[in-house]
Amino acid sequence: MSSYSFLVGRPDKKPIFNHDGGDSEIAYSCDWVPLGWLALFEPKDVQVVEEPPQSDTYDPDTSTRCPTLIRRRDAALKTLQRRRERLMKVLPDYLRPQLRGLEDALGASSHPYVQAVVTDLDQFASFPGSEQELRELVAALDGDDVKQWRRVLSHVDADMGKDLAHVEFSDMTGVAAVVGYLPEKFAISLTGKPVSAEKTSAPAKGKTKATAAAKKKPWWKFW
Image 1 (cartoon, rainbow, N blue to C red):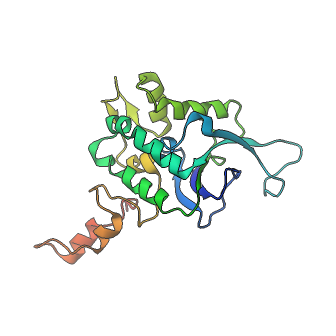
Image 2 (cartoon, one colour; image 1 turned 90 degrees about the vertical axis):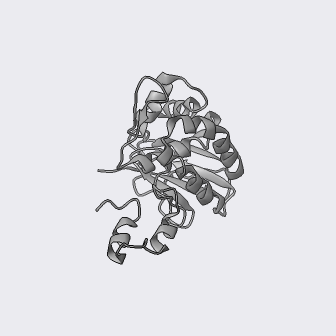
Image 3 (cartoon, one colour; image 1 turned 45 degrees about the vertical axis):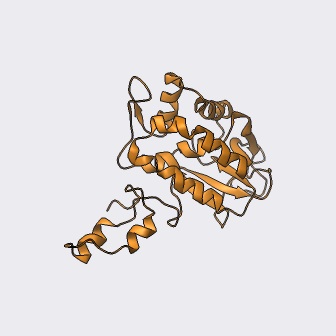
């Protein structure tokens, strides 16, 4: 069973415990916090939130706490830009354009703050030490420590060899490992073009419309 994380816009620096949908959602992910999301934050941005009494799963006899990441959106975009060079060492050529889609989605948000909600991820929900674990994942992106990067890449189901030049992403989940699932208008296909542009472009000369349409399915559809 999949668990989810969400990248959402917030009107202020008060984090929410969980995300129930709505226009504030920037992207979502399954089973991990994507590399691009982690690259938006600093270790000091980790906070701990408690489950509110109005939650459907609230139990007054237990205290459910979970780490989260939140900071100003403009600062988050600047941090992503600062870390871009190091991320380029890790990402294969075909995945590098995905960061552009994430930047566009963040830039379109109407909220001044951005939060990564990880309450639904088993790795962090009510797990002792999860706050420090999330902080260490973020901090690893500021260095070239092989051991730390191996841990980060393992978090998004990527394999690392002897150094940062030997990283392999799954063909099925590589995009999701970098940016999660963005709205279609911001999604970048594996050709480096916006998904919407590929869907509306004319078929190449000598190809049938049916063949062209089959090759222009959104990148997240594998069937």
